[in-house]
Image 1: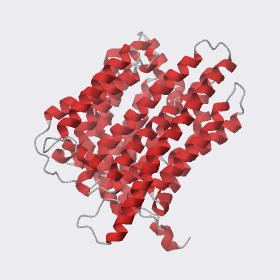
Image 2: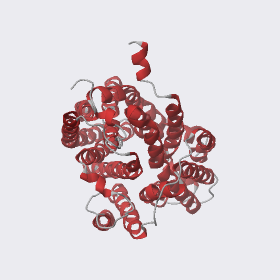
Image 3: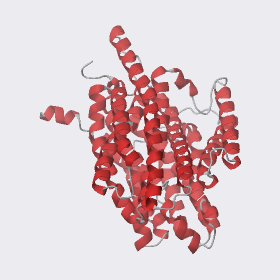
Image 4: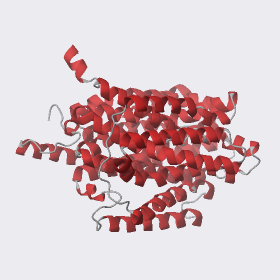
Length: 493
């Protein structure tokens, strides 16, 4: 590779500095969705409460996270992206410190909600800052940077949580965020662009009262699947249906009013619509399946939390490698084609897990996980790159929370579906071999849903190629160039 071509694949210094700040914040926010899960039993024993009650430490965080997402667009314009991002970091860091000092389950749950309020702002506002700063030339590469915590946190979160739990105590699962948060605030204050306030208009309070509880209720209902054991249990169905009704009312209202809380008219663009559906489908396929392998190692192989985390590392290695190359693949072949290729690799590399037994070689599983990690890394972030690529600068703030909601609700739905399927096959399993068979059967469902995810990915690729053909046919410079048009233009058609 020549020095010129090497430099073309390097982020500009000011964009790289901003990326470091945003990734630091995203690591804290996303990591805390998984790091606590391994500590729930210890928390219930230490705080003298039932597992059902202490489960709210995880659920409360997710609900707070989901509730804050819809308001970030308005708040970003009203307060300014930099100010809002730093305020969210401070809120999250303070909540983390208070969680580490909690004296009861009630106080811990309350402080986790506080932490989630900050965490719900960090990711979408960080994406907005970074995508705006990147411009067309860097959009694919900065999306790969954002993808590092999104893809790797579910893999390494339980490992880190297990190590801290074993060697330091549950308090440090939260206190570990404090030095990272302080560092993130310091570098954000120094390195982030000033981010002027924009015309936000009055807060769409009616829209907020529809979409906030709507997203929270859907998230809550899906999170209850594990304890309810069925997708048709009243504790699952009722909140999900009520939440969906509120979201439908929000959509109907947003398409009528002149200044809605979220600009849903973005979905009228075929490229953005296809990329958004793909993001939702991949959230269900990728993050839903991530719960299965840790449980397999623990239930069918009898491994502890720390060893389980170490056994999951090959998938993280594959994903990290894919993140390194996905930007170049996106710039060369287009985001849609890269996403299709990533989904195909993910589906094919999932097939070996459908044959796992109670004595399957860890070496073979590790090799399959490396390949699956590559598939994950080359599908999720190119899809989000495509979503941002056709947008004007002023539309990025609306798109970011929408994509985050779709990704997380998709992930919650995938977790719910795979949990119910697994539990139905695990019931009555009395031996490690029977338990392993239950996981193998569930993985066939993962393969099937991965194949289904190919449909929106294929539509995304076709939409992208049609847009490129139209652009080449007109060959006229746009008055307001889209944020990432170069990310969608293959070097060779």
